[in-house]
Every structure is written in structure tokens, then in C-alpha cells.
Image (tube, rainbow, N blue to C red; front, side, top):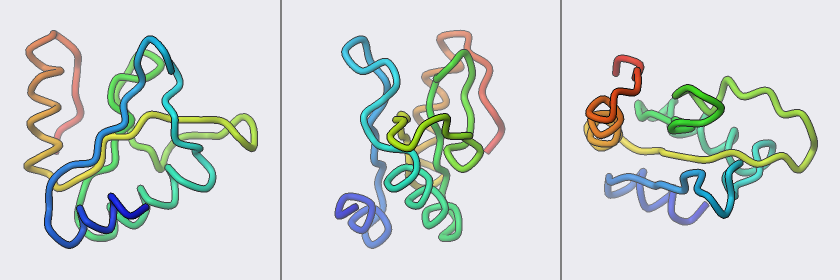
Length: 98
């Protein structure tokens, strides 16, 4: 939460993606991911799951299937998240428009 506060104040990007060790991500959807995503989006930023479950989506659109389920996070301003999306585009992954 402190990292998101810093991102809101000074800009930048907060990334905690899914990886081989944690394929579902590490942040808990219900009380970390989704609440922070709503705050970031209300401030004009983007809160993405990155490439997760075969697509790139919004964190706020996740439907938790358990109380402690986890999700990957890419949050920040449109410019910074756009840089990550550009990397996905170069890899041939369909990305949403910003």
C-alpha cells in the first residue's frame, strides 16, 4: 500500500507480475489488489493484471473465487503502463487501448 501511495504522489509504476514461482501473482485480490486498483483508476491511472489467464485485463474486473485468492498487478499512470503494454505488443500479445 505504501508503494501505491508513492506512485500516486510522485508518479511511476508499481509492478508485481505473475511469474513461474507465483503463477497467480502474490497480492490478495480482495483486500490488496482490487481496492488499490479502484483508487488508482479513480486518480486517472491504469490497474492491469498484465498477461494473466491468457489475456491482459483490469484488476477491478477480476472475480475472486476464494477469500485469499491472489492476482498479479501492474499499476501506474497511462504513460508508464503504456511502456509495459508496448512490450506485450512486441511479443505479439493483444493489449487493450489506453
